Image (cartoon, rainbow, N blue to C red; front, side):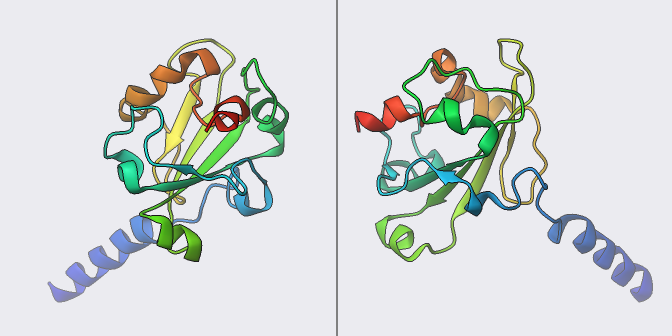
Length: 158
């Protein structure tokens, strides 16, 4: 019986605890950091509430080469399929200054069809990107900008 329980625990850990990040965002730190020198702080949209560390949180956003031109422009914001955005979220200013233990969320553009299913989200660096009603709850407010809040236009008025 002990051997069976041990085998199950090893299997569970190897299945869930040690997943490698998706290759689409594994090297995100080498991408353009649109928030460089100007992290988003708190809840400037009024939609975050306590998500992403709420009013105390600091956020950094990275974009891959596929979406860089669109994200760093003044709009319109219609991202090409394959765009990946990675958001690092820090609990407060000290954690951000120290780059200490960010929580990672990922957005992946998967379709050109306008609507709720054109992005998938991963809720950690090693999670699988999938449709998320939870993420859409807020991101639907950014429908006009292809469900993305942190655009160059947004940052320029912060």
